[in-house]
Image 1: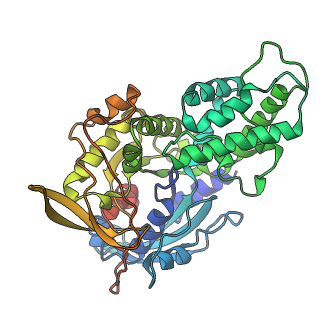
Image 2: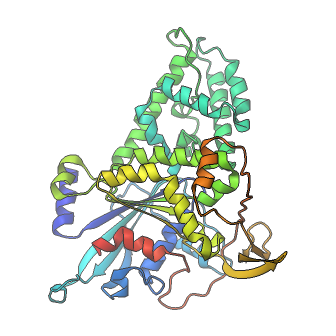
Image 3: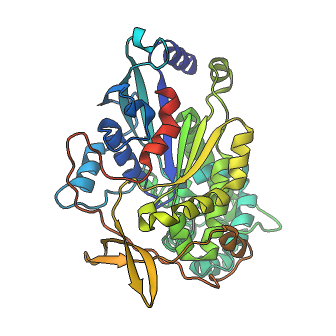
Length: 458
């Protein structure tokens, strides 16, 4: 009944676009949403947004979001952090949040001048990408998940402490709560270390962002190999029960209440960070993104199909963030690598009827470009303020290959390092900026991203 009421209201009165924004850790979700909203409200830097360039967006203003039980995205605090007198990066996404931005838009077309302006609502849903990875767990049993995890982490240095501890455990013995808590804590420590080292397949996601669930039985389990015989009330049986509880009590409600209602999606990908971490991290990112995208329900949202089948994601944007860390001459190569990285997932979405696009962007531009001579070579560099030291420096990250296969093939084959290149990445702090009236924060291609995601509805 709720779906029927929402669909009828949107079709007859004020249409609503529900835009999901996700990405794995350090992909820049908070900065993306903050800059997008600021630039949609003050559109001087958004020439690629057709409705804005044509002057048909009369106004854009924030309103209370319709979901009273979901925290509001703290837009004002994040914008102040990015553009204030002492700019700094805002706090990262740690839970789901939402923000509603409403537009007064003059219709286009031959009869547009005879019709009054209409209201279009944009509901932006921000949620951690680690939570989205959990959706792939819904199709796995505890035994299958355990087998996959052990195969994946067997050779990882970060996992050796947990693996050593897990091998000494007899999973057929009766549950010892202290032992179970110790195993879960050791596995969570591995996940946190792996994430810091650039790995992406860090599930279960709530182990990284437990919130008020920390210490609960639903988060006190770990992958243990299945023994030949499994007595009742054994450690393995209890781990299996808690894994199923995690899926039914945590993962499924998130899918039902939030994710399944989204009809536009942005997937932010830190491709540069994965390349910098090496071939193993890049291949891990490819697998993780493929798992994420299997959770999407791509397709078109007709009126009847929305009522009978539920909402589907009509448009998916794959965005490689931090494009300002590269000179603009390399942006096309970064986009090509992103497209190749997500090729299988994009093909599935296109076949289902959804429109997809890939691009490289920077939601907040932190660098300027310059060309420097070094050892007889002319290098295209970027200059910015280093986050760790506060000093301003010019930086050359290395040249990305024109053919993405030069990166993807070694990654798929399990190469330990890049053979013929060394790719570097620096962490830049937000630059001090002075905004004129009507201007949002400086960016790279944020207007084109907005046009792809929202243009057809404005």
